[in-house]
Length: 446
Image (cartoon, rainbow, N blue to C red; front, top):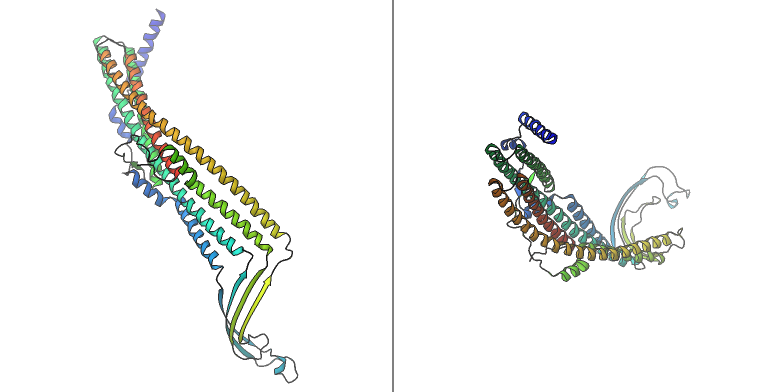
């Protein structure tokens, strides 16, 4: 008896507090209106993200530098050509021009000259070939890196797009929950007035409505955050929304699982970049070993000059010279260069093997996760249909006085959880598929 009185007192206190602080009406949600500048489809989001991304700009800059390096390595096989000019005025003349046989001071003399000179390496011990191989490998690595960054930015754009789209669907789920809660509150109030329900039923319905509106506010905040993140990614100054595609249902892959795995191991951007880096390190080892061979160079030139007696002035004529240089000892610098190059080559080889293993493992993991996500989408659809049918039955039973308000609230909560689970399943599938495409380096849509 005492517990019954205590429960009645608690209900009275709760009703009094609710009367003093009424639950906000549906119209008060306009206070928290969303701010979305515009909505974009997935293709537009990806295209604008590639243009606005600083990562892509850095990768393209590295590609231009690598192409310049290839030109430089090819230019090493061509002779260098230079032009020089000089103008000289001095009062120091040669000894043959003075009566006493020595240099004297006096009136100054002028000297003018111009010359063309050229030089060409005849033999470098294989250094030029190694440098050219290194430059080409670096170009291959830069090309693979640029392709890899393009797919990574595409993946980031798809993630942001799906996050904004998921926020929109979460807001829809929250709005549906609010509508169900308002309808349940109306049913409970009608039954209380009819004397077929207690105040506890109405309080539970009000609590469900308050919780539903809290979830709606949280969904609005999630969507607004995702919209601002998407706007930054595409280069906009404000929030950008996601325009839903025609369908988000799972579609079959263009290749079989074994073909996708083989494609990832052989031609994934990460694998291509690692293999190119390994080839570049091998070329650096060859270039460092060429330091043990002599360098033979041919130089030639022709000078035009005014005949003068000034000491040190350029004399007219031509010259051709062939010279060789070989450092016999340079403080172990050659040995150090070879040791560093070999160590780098060893690390590059180990990294290439590890990346190949990692890509194979990631491809298998993503394929397995994609198939599980596809099955989960189908199960989530079935769960939503079953939960909605159960809620319909429980609502009719509650209105007829056959079931309790707790049964109806339990069914409402089950519908909300099933709808949230379907949203999570659909976008988990979409993100997993986008991740697999970024790993492989190509679209897997048929």
